[in-house]
Image 1: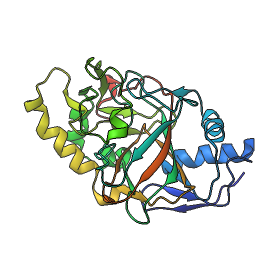
Image 2: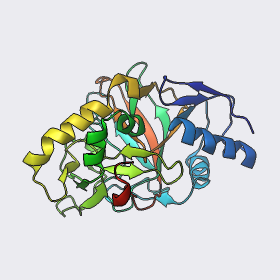
Image 3: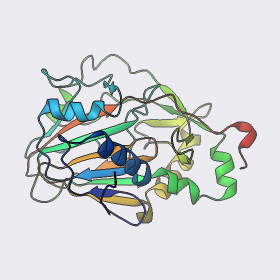
Image 4: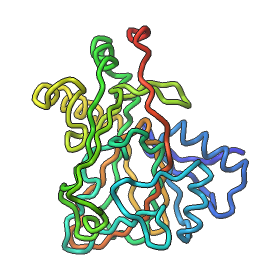
Length: 282
């Protein structure tokens, strides 16, 4: 089934037109799956979804990834309600990151559904880690393919009051996860960078934070160049899904006097695949 899409930028992202996710058939879902691989992030406007209906759509993609450090809704634990009250700072996702990089099996995709949004502000930015890798010099690609990142969730990072309350056992240390800096996408076979800001990607494996910082900061500046990005402006009823295996995203904190409520589901992923060391120069 052909899916009508409108690109969000010249590099990544598309809005899918004329689709009711509740009534979506198998052929339509197949087209949407193909579109996600092509565009990396998709948004659907004017959706009316109960938590159960959002969960049913999510399960068409695979098993649900439960966040190891955040509690979900009492009646639907697969959904994390992201709330920022008027007068609070957002602080949740307000830095460049890919979801769940701090776990051994990071989330394959994230699905976010807008329940309450400000009239303006609160957009989400996305950056293509695939385009970022492709644009590196051959020498930097070869170096990056040999490195692994050390990632750790920060339970004590500043958050809004309601989001901080969702973290049980705040004094119990999080467990680290190590991943290749260059990840091979399991469906497209394309290579992409795979890292977060140093709030989570603390250093390279076998190196100190001081040694790691200059290269991590350079790669983040490189990966978030405007030509690698797109932006979603949220409306009530907008649902977006994005591929964590090849994107970073950032929630803009530019609506201090307004409330914002989003329902998030993450989809279970696989172990990260690095570049075969015998094929690094390819």
